[in-house]
Image (cartoon, rainbow, N blue to C red; front, side):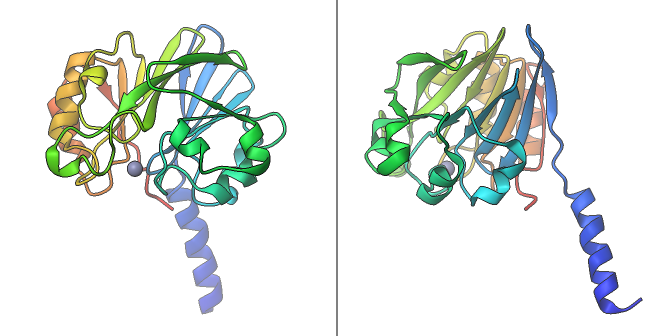
Amino acid sequence: MNRVLIFSFWLFLSSIVSGQTADKIKTSSGHLTVNPVKHGTVVFQWMGKVVFVDPVGGAALYEKFGTPDMVLVTDIHGDHFNKDTLSAVVEEKTIVITPEAVATLISGNVKKRITTLANGKSVDKVGLKIEAVPMYNLTASRLKFHNKGRGNGYVITFGDKRVYVSGDTEDIPEMRALKNIDLAFVCMNLPYTMTPERAADAVREFKPKIVYPYHYRGSDTSKFKKLVGNVSEVRLRDWYVR
Ligand SMILES: [Zn+2]
């Protein structure tokens, strides 16, 4: 075989090996499909509806999911909000939900589709209830990363399932006080958010049925899984394959 053939074969093989698996979760109306995309980005599909959380990294990553009915943005930083990716994926029918701090950075067509939500507020759109929850740092040396009130974590209700996406946060009291969470996406990475130990400690308190560590670059997720123990089902997925 010549080199080009070998390289093509390798590309083919690695595309199979690195393919991220989507999880299907049973809800009161059909299945919720969970697609880990990258770092802090996840795509949900449910009852023909498509929800992007923090689409960044270029529109090509999202082509296979089609036009989103809803896009949620958690915060202003580049790993959560990218103006170009956002305007490329948002279309006429898309509802965009952001905190005020993100909305002020957007103009043009996307701006018209934004509903801003402050921490503690909620809204019903396209048949989904969206609650904005706080996300912020607690540790003195990390306060500069995420101040309280700027960004939003979200609780999204799909049928009878409540899904929590933490955004960038430490183990704040508002996370610990969450109730009836079926699926949780919890961040952990230093210096921006928290350690696997703090994340596991919070999870042991609010007890989601299933928890996915996400936004975990450089963190030991196996330690997190061990510390959570049998309080929640921990699902380790590769969020960094691309
Ligand atoms: Zn982040």
